[in-house]
Amino acid sequence: MKLGWGSRLLSVWAGVALLFLFTPIFVIVAFSFNKPLSTYNYLWHKFSFDAWAHPFRYSQLKDAFLLSLRVALLATFISVVLGTAMALALVKYRFRGKGLINTLLVLPLTMPEVVLGFSLLTVFVAINWDRGFRTVVVAHVMFCMSYVATTVKARIRGFDWRLEDAAADLGADPWRTFTKVTFPLILPGVAAAALLCFALSLDDFIITYLNSGLKPTFPVAVWTLKRAAVPPQINVFATSVLVVGVTLALGGMALQRRSARAA
Amino acid sequence: MDGRIARRGWVPYALLAPGLAWLVLFFVVPLFSLGRKSLERGGLHNYSKVFSDNAAVIGRTFLYALAATMGALVLGYPLAYVIATRGGRAKNLLLALVVLPFFTTYLIRTIAWKVLLFGDGPVVRFLRFTHVFGRNSELLGTHWAVIGALTYNFLPFMVLPIYVSLEKIDPRLLEAGIDLYATPIATFRRVTLPLSMPGVFAGSLLTFIPAAGDFVNAELLGSDGQRMIGNIIAKNFEKDVFRPKISALSFVLMVVILSGVLLYARFLGTEDVI
Image 1: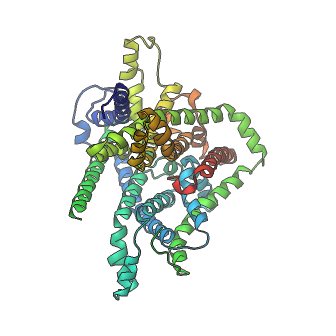
Image 2 (image 1 turned 180 degrees about the vertical axis):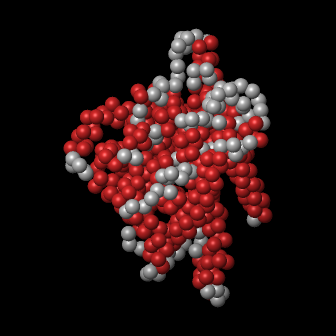
């Protein structure tokens, strides 16, 4: 089909949308190489590797980043276990109250974070839980689990569960059936959900801000620090996360393509 | 359907129990707690007070969220359409580019907008240079900055569901349209667009919800005249005296959004929301 001018305009418009998505990322990466004149890294002054050479100059950023990683790891682990179990139950079995549970799972995703975060805070205050690592992990699991369950559910719908029966008929006990048949089958979906959850946890600001107390995660530390300074070190952390994330994603895509070719 | 659906009494309940308990304790109970808190020290009076004190902010919040949703739709639908129909071998790469912003913290992306939009930044300088802007015009502290950044921040949430619904369309339907002598535009209007509506609805919700609850964009890029509901909550949540009124405000925000979601669910069913 020949592309008319209207159609070309459409492609250009899509290009504009992509450019819009990219510009801030370009700014983040570029400004990690800036040597700003003031404490605020807003104006381009001079190219420099300064911030990359001293990424940990602001120790509160480093501590917060390590805390963010710990929170994300633990929250991902708990959400993946609980969320996958829920997804399996919802896809494989028929039981009473299924519709209600599906709705309950989607509901947290339909609420603004500020409501989720603040309502959770009122509970933590009522039961006297000090805000910190524990409350942040609890909050992250709450919203991650819904994402995990919906992602895994979507990925495993339409599987041929008779494979499990076949394994059982061949004498495998339930545990062996799970590890040798079910788990490898659902693994790609679970891995995708885990990555999503890890990224969401690392990135979350609003809910965390309302529930982190004196121990800030990375985004909360940036928010607090910005009253005094926005140093290029923030950009160094962000750029590093970006590079690691993109590498992992590309690696995953390559692996998927290889296994698709092998199959 | 799912091949075979087992009926083994307790197994599904055992699988569900831990996750369900977590959801009830840390999602359902907090909502009740929020409702109770909102009635403390003043009862329903808290609500009328919240409405009269914050009428402008409440109106602005939903107006901003609506504008950002429209903006994301106008930018996002063509992008999703081009990727789905003309992506070819680059489809996965293009999709990866759409989600790339998610690999950097949303707070830092918003700070990047500040770099772009502040008085000595490139955008304002360009606008002054081309005389679109006068010497003293600013972008920071305007509706445009906040709405633009909200649009930006939630744009991928609009693109992805629309892409998914476009991708699902059977190409034979489009061929049928052509066979029946429909023009490309008529085929789009009569076949593609209606079939992509679930994606448009889902994307609109996924954009509107976080935009309505946001305070980061208004705080970083706006001034007092751009404050949203989220800003009031974020500013006062630490002090116990303010919590009843903030709870009432949160409840209002939640009810408005939930009614939108319910309306949506009536049209399309909950299974397709995500």
